[in-house]
Length: 131
Image (cartoon, rainbow, N blue to C red; front, side):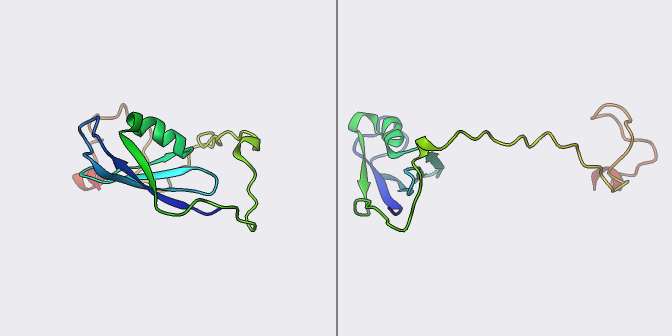
């Protein structure tokens, strides 16, 4: 399979936000995941597990449809991807378990002198405080 491009065509603007006609474009990746980019004043990109999720959320019961720009996906004999449902779950790594690095810059590291937001020590110049 290869990536497959599409557009969302809105026939009726249920939300009153995006208007009618082409409202977004996207791509369905080889594993079925979808990236969707909205047109308009506030362009946004979202990622979905599959096109079914996009239609379930943005289809509004047929008010919006998917228009495929590329032909039907076919098998790619060179690519061997296992189905997602056969992959074991993998938790995200704990990125916050490492100790905090020490700041080697003495101008930015002072021993605890009270709470944040308090006045700086009397020997500090505005240059040192705001640099």
